[in-house]
Image (cartoon, rainbow, N blue to C red; front, side, top):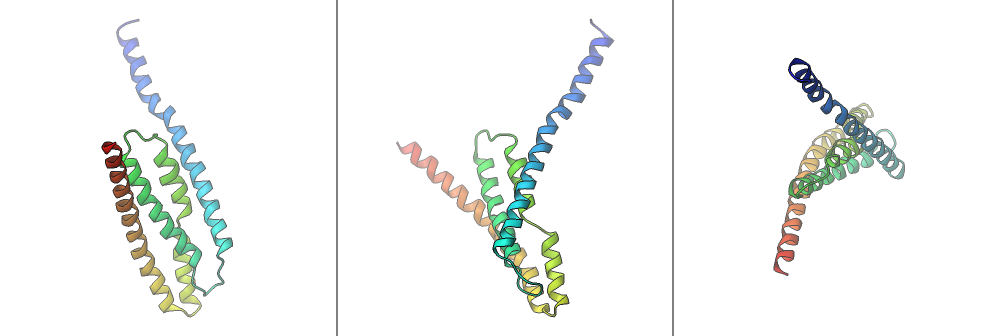
Amino acid sequence: MTGAGQRTDVLHARRTAPRARQWDVVLAVAAGGALGSIARYGLSLVVPHEPGQFPVATLLANIGGCLAIGVLMAVITEATAPHRLLRPFLGIGFLGGFTTLSTYVVETIDSVRTGHPVMAVSYLLGTVVACLLSVVLGLLVTRSALTRGRSAVGRR
């Protein structure tokens, strides 16, 4: 078959091929998100707090998740050919489910409502600063380690 019919088949293949490949990405994000959320819930059980107390578990989840995203991004950008589902599963899914903005906001509001406005502001600002520093630290330390590792391999 040549002509218009062949052209239509080619256009149809181009339009449908990317959609077919997206399902594995969606499933990777969903699976990672479910596991990350379960991990955060587990952390909240290990480090519980009552209303009005400092929310250590959420702070640890957000700082730890930000540190891990810095490490992950360094590994992915330095790797020669990372698996295409690595970032969706770990970065968007798992770490997206593990870290939490909504709980952070609710706990900040809860601190104000229970009469702890100084703690609320400290938590609000401290979390942002600590999380940004954690991403940078994870990125820089991992890149440095990867660079040293490549240098050591090159000297052999």
